[in-house]
Amino acid sequence: MILACGGAATLLAVVLVGRWLRRRFLVVTVEGRSMEPGHRDGDRVLVDRLRSATVRVGDVVVVDRDGVPDRPDRPMIKRVAALPGEPVPVEVCAFQHWPIRTRVPPGQLVLLGDNPAGSLDSRQRGFFPADRLLGVVVRQLRRDR
Image (cartoon, rainbow, N blue to C red):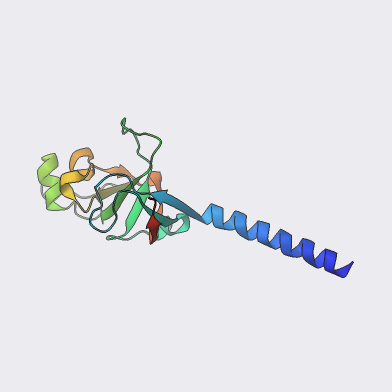
């Protein structure tokens, strides 16, 4: 009888830990060339949903494709270039025809792909809503091929 209770407690613990892991982490497959050479098409990355509260410039993040018609159900992977209150990078200002001293408004982010030639990012779209942030990439897993 003691073993049965211990087994049930262990099973419950495994189920609870599994639920916690699914809520905290997300696995996303990279699509496209925008994050080359670091992340290539087909790579899989582990995303920490809780890290989105402490996102920093330079972090690779995953965001919903807010309003992007080509694949609205697929998340985008980009690098954070500027946070609210910070200056918008000159390359984004030039592409958007904004004054050089433009600052990121509250609740917005500047996101860039590592491969400018193959990326749809803040150079073309402007600001990304911070509330569309799904999490921060914490690890590259394996290629999905």
